[in-house]
Structure formats: structure tokens, C-alpha cells
Length: 42
Image: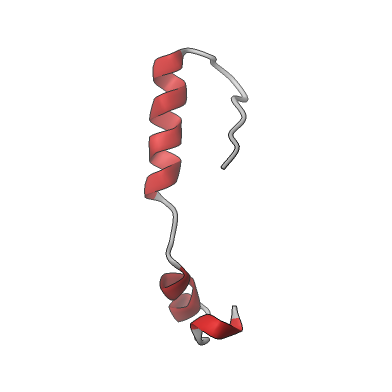
């Protein structure tokens, strides 16, 4: 996984933003359910 800091390079802010982004990741199963498809179809 790669990240890019667009604004502040303050280490605390970078870690905070990374953790927030990781919390928003969805599983393949969740994406399939949102799209009303099977996991194999996505």
C-alpha cells in the first residue's frame, strides 16, 4: 500500500490520516453486497 501526503508532513497527521483511511477499507464481501453481486463476480 502506498500513500502520499498532500498537505502537512507532520508525522502525527500522516499517521492519523493513514489510520482513518485504513478504517474505511471494505472487505470484498462488503463490496459484493453493496453491488448485489457474488464475491467471484467482482
